[in-house]
Length: 79
Length: 373
Image (cartoon, rainbow over all chains, first blue to last red; front, side, top):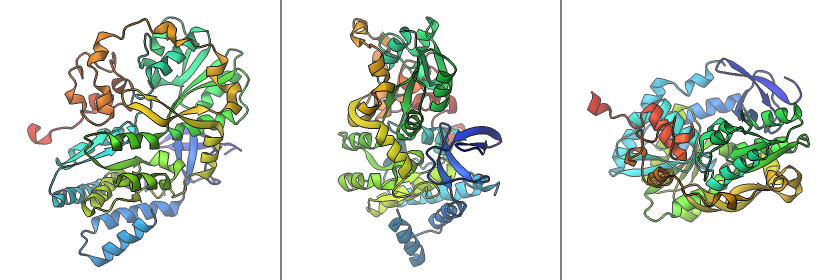
């Protein structure tokens, strides 16, 4: 990492990415969302688990399950 | 940590999501059509063969989500005319074959114009620093890419650098599509990259106005399947709202620093999108404060010199506009994979890597697995 650029590993390919418009400070080891050579988001590791958990709730089935309904309502509330 | 990205491509999760999607569409008991507005979504759908997993009763239509495809003829003409004055044009590779009134940038290059293919706006600035020649960044893309252009403009580019902005802004064109007469679209899958910048809140008024749900989804196969599951669920429940299915990147308010740079450099103005319509506030142009880097002010551009030429005959049969509007698909076009192929494209949908026709040509569109079994 240098002041305004970072070297990023994309599925094994390394490229330099600018940090001008990233939403918060990044550190070595972070995941970022890249667009045309600019980092536009530092991906918080905990949010990855959050997304995967969200997908699991979709699988848990139907609306007759009250708990699933609650989880859905909660997700919708944070949209 | 290293296997985290792979979880978004996990085949077991994909199969379960696809089964859930099939069950929900079955519960709906009727055909439904939804639209995504991003070339990267179409690319992922085609690349990973997701269309073969979609239930037959669910039509997933690609909307006007390819920025190169919607770059209008006069915008290409401006680039061609600036190149003819000896400036170096730096642009994304997709732009070269996009037809102008008379010439594409590739045609201009064959006649001696200097065209450099770039991957990022910062490469155009790097190029300008290495030469005394005028370098013009012919900038296409939606707000996500416009943010990168804004960043290089705000980072003291050299005096021989300027920008020809053909950037476009997605939210207004969704209004146009939603209001199209005869529209069958019951829900939208919004692009995760763009929403990372704008935030999910930008769609809230849209949902209120049109009563159709918007689900924000990422670009991995399971992101898209999960997004569709949620979208169909909202359609079935009859409760239109904005749901963010890409929380690892999208927040309600978005990337505020990026928005600030975007709107400091650009203003939105009405303009034509090729094949779609005049889109109020759909074009991003440089503010007066940045006139010194605006190629439209630096170079004399007289488009009327091109207007005597008739458009090529084949272009008259191209249905690219209907395809971008989601009314027809490439199979409905008599030119598709015959006269119109990536090596010799007729319309912009076959030119760009994000164009529906190019993607269907490469990956086969909707494979009919039952017929080939």
